[in-house]
Length: 262
Image (tube, rainbow, N blue to C red; front, side, top):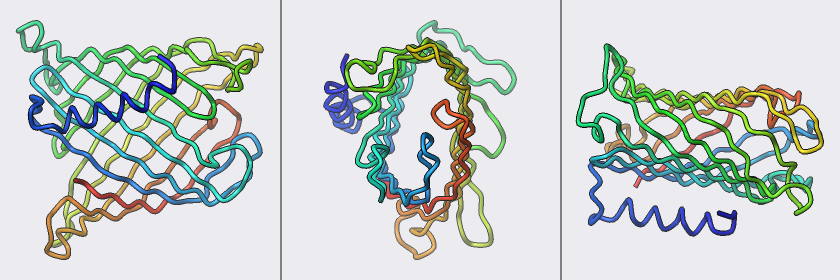
C-alpha cells in the first residue's frame, strides 16, 4: 500500500465508521488545532507551527478503531513541516469476543490484537505496527490502554526522494483520559506517551530510540457557557520529544490546544 492510496482509505473509513448503518456501539470524531514553537530536529531552529488534526475513534461488537490525520504548517521554508501531512490508523479485535471467553484479570479488562499503519507525506514513510493492546480498569480514568507493537518499515527511501529506509524495531505506547472537576468547571487530563526502540537507516547510521509524550489538559467551554457539553474544549498540550525523529535533539514545548468534537 503506497502513501497516495492511504488518504482516500482513511477518508473512506471516516464515512464508514460514522455512518449509522455501521454497527458502531459508540464513536467520536474531533478537529484539533495545536499551535507552538516546534523545533526542526535537523537544524534545531524553532518556528511557529500550527497542526490541524482530524481524529476518529469508534467501538463495535468485535473491537475498536482509531485514526488521525495531521496537517502541519510552520512559518519557515526549511523543508520540514512547511505544508505536510502525517497519519496513523489502528484497528483492534477483542480476544474476549473472538474466543468467547472473558480475558481479564484484576485491573486488566481485555486483550486485543491490533494492526496499525503510520504514514508521513513528504518523507514518504510507511510503517506497519502489528501487536497487542491491553485495556485497563483504573479508578477515575475514562480509559487507559497500553499498546506493544512491532515497528516494520516499508518506506520508499532516499532513492525515491524520501527519508532513509530503516531497519525494523518495536513500540510501546500508553494512552489515557482522566476527567475531573474544579468547582463547577469540568476538565480533562488526557494524551499518550510512546517509546520507539533504536534502529539503523539504510546508510548504517544509528536512529536513536525516542520518547514522545503529549499530555493535554482541557477545559470544557461548552459546559462553562451552558452550551452542549464536551463539544468545544480549550487547553494546553505539552509536547516532550526526547531524540526527536531519532536525532539527538530534545524538544519540550507548550502548545495552545483547541478541540471541537462533532
